[in-house]
Image (cartoon, rainbow, N blue to C red; front, side, top):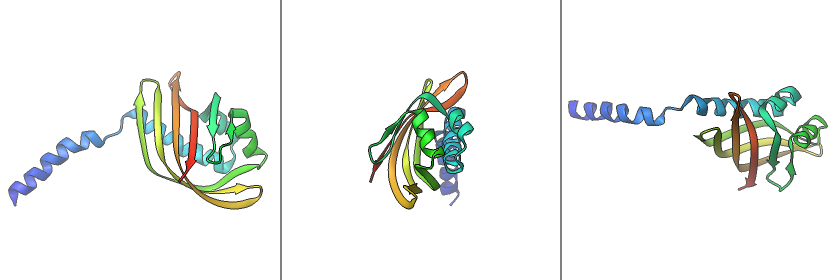
Length: 142
């Protein structure tokens, strides 16, 4: 029994560092949470702070928007979301770029009608002057 306990402790000692997130990965994951909250709240100021002007935002139905179009559609209530749950999110940082993939289940609004949808996404976040903002997002239906 002692040998089994010792092996478990040894396994944890090696596995824990591999599971630990870097500060940049933590920051990008928080940015994703903040982006979802800003979309739900339709917080224009936050949406501008969380996305770069060069944003390319691809929806799961194929529509592509730049930053102004993405924010304007939310403010004008042409699109929106009332709830979001992201799962299986992976984040990897390479220099000033972070690649994030995951699954999202959302309650959205399309032309005034509540719509539940699920999709996979890939997001590219870029760090400039110490801050992470969304540069590219593409979603696709599952």
